Image (cartoon, rainbow, N blue to C red; front, side, top):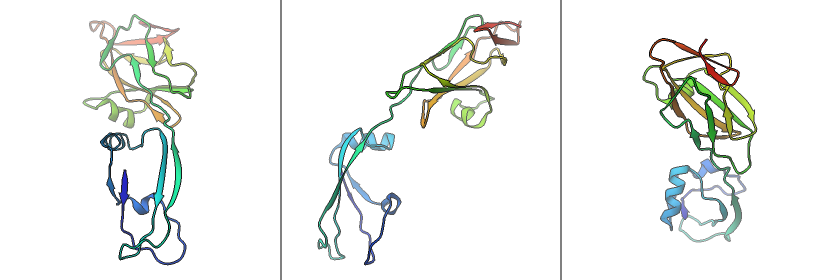
Amino acid sequence: MKVNQSRLIKTGRSNYKYNDFSGAEVKYNNGKYKEIILRTGNAPEGNYTICVTALDESGTEVGRENCIIQSVVQMGSITLLTPGDGEEIDPKMPIMFTWTPLTKGGPYSLRIVEIKGDQSPEVAMKQNRAIYEKYDIKSTTHQGDPIHGVDVKLGMKYAWQVSSGDVQSEVLMFIMKSAGGIFPYVSIRDNLFRYP
């Protein structure tokens, strides 16, 4: 990958940050890296050599090339496993939230919000108050008592997400299966879903 940018620099010493060069022209020597960087916003994990050469207005090199070695280490990602996206949950059965681990491990946080109207799960997660949050989960599972003391409406949609530090999973949706309209709510207590 090669980055080119013309920038008039005043004589003297200055410090520059990434934003000073954000408009640079980027030429990718390898399409694989271009796809990864554009999709994720990050370079793949590895060691990179970054070099800068100063040229005058006519394009003549006026200073020697300066290089640094930069290591990129990815934090990893969290992938939600169960309940699956759009899965209907039987309120008579225990619920198991599971996800893939980060290489550094947890702890993890689980957040559940109600999806209102025609909201997407992502919008609901950003805009709605959590009906349940659990912090400091040491494993990649959380069973049974996901919303202790909260009455969850049957037939309603809920969004869930897991995070650890700055790493957040995607947002998935599950539905509390309706019990034929007989019971409008299910209380979740004692690691089981039970009708009140």
